[in-house]
Amino acid sequence: MHRRIIAPGALAAASLLLAIPASAASYSPGAPGIGDPYYPNYGNGGYDVSHYDLRLQYQPKTDELQGTATILARTTRDLSSFDLDFLLDVSEVRVDGAKASFTASGEHELVVTPKTPLAKGTTVTVVVRYSGVPSTKSAYGFSTWHRTPDGAVAADEPEAAWWWFPSNDHPGDKATYDVSVAVPDGTQAISNGTLQSTTSKLGWTRYNWRQNKPQATYLATLALGRFDITTGTSDGGVPVINAYSKDLGDNDGAARASVERTGELVDWLSGYFGPYPFSSAGGYVPNTTTGYALETQTRVYYSPKQFANGSNTSVVVHELAHQWYGDDVSLKHWKDIWINEGFARYAQWLWSEHEGEGTAQELADYVYASHPADDAFWTVAPGDPGADHQFDAAVYDRGALAIQALRNTIGDDAFFRILKGWPRTHAYGNASVADFQRYAEQVSGKPLSALFDTWLFQPSKPAAPSARALAGAGTGTEATRPKSWKRIEATNDVHGH
Ligand code: TRP
Ligand code: ZN
Image 1: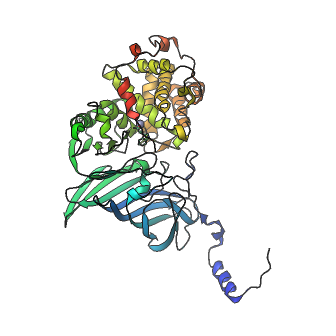
Image 2 (image 1 turned 180 degrees about the horizontal axis):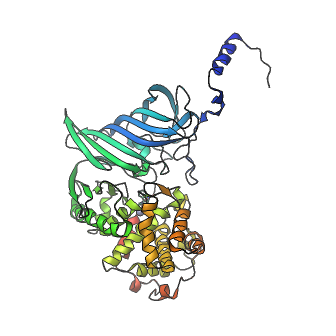
Image 3 (image 1 turned 30 degrees about the horizontal axis):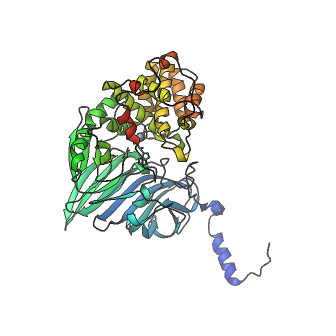
């Protein structure tokens, strides 16, 4: 230790320090990541958000977004500072009303230092004023803010929030949302949940959207552009709100012929998964050049390309299945992606069977037979595929095959009780692959660790599960390919960053 001469100023500083509570030593910066093994810097540590209130204004001509985010949170430890994930330009941050200092750090961190440290277990209100042109911002060299001729769209996975609101950007911290957006008259703003009201003033129209159930940050969506909005109610009583870009060209008819069936398909899926968990359903089709669809909560994102070959109810079933598997019950860490994609793909298999285009068993047999043992397909473990293979076809196809193997092992009765019971058991929460295995063992009364290990975790082709799966399996040739196959495969047409 250095010997120092203590100057009077330092003495004053020392006595100031004494004014801070004895526990002050425990106040330290919150972590820049929530602890996800695939994405160490995603989300943040030290607090938990309960609500986002986003009051925004957007100009489509220039892509300028400005607004105020009010974030309600609770600290989970003593904090001297904490991070938000965000890329736009911040002009002011207040914590519990007091101006806080802030600085950008890393690829997408906004480090906020409140005037006084925050004690563990207290509620905090954070106000962030910001503006910026999202299309000029990137992190790790990419952007997921998609400009359209008439505006822009935020809908991507696992990163989309950084370009439009400051957040604890990880599915592990779900929250409710009020999203209020002013756009020039003639432009519409689409987001999650229900449209509470619209108001018009001086050439601007404000859309007030509300998501009243917990929602992961990547499932929050914002679309700004010229849309035709349709509303209805399903037979089962679920309000439906859809929106179509006014510039879908030749894809317009097929898009509407697919997405307008949302209410019917929500009701059909309820038969397998239980009551629809949210206060509205629907989808929107903006004028984007992307290829994928995304299960943005209550308001599914569909690329026009999904309808380039005609109507496509299969993709609608996939994204609506996610409302139970992925949105209501969200993954704990990104490695648990099978909790989302395995089941959304399996729902497409059930729909194929319903439509007479191939049974779930026939689709499983085809997946099994069409990939020889030396195919790299079997090296991807759907139960923990690695960040680079998170959305590999194997996560979907081998993932659904694993679900069929489970069904054949425990029988239809236990299997369908599990499909319906899982969303109820973990409603509005988070769960892992291990949680699913435990639940399936509990409901079926069978030990399943060998089955899960073989089908979800071994980097090799499992031995043929049973004589039943081999019968009719053929060799994965065109002759044995179920009619629904090609359309189902086109669902996860993901063009990576
Ligand atoms: N989750 C989406 C689906 O299953 C697909 C998807 C994977 C995706 N990676 C993506 C979508 C990246 C957008 C961006 O439908
Ligand atoms: Zn999916």
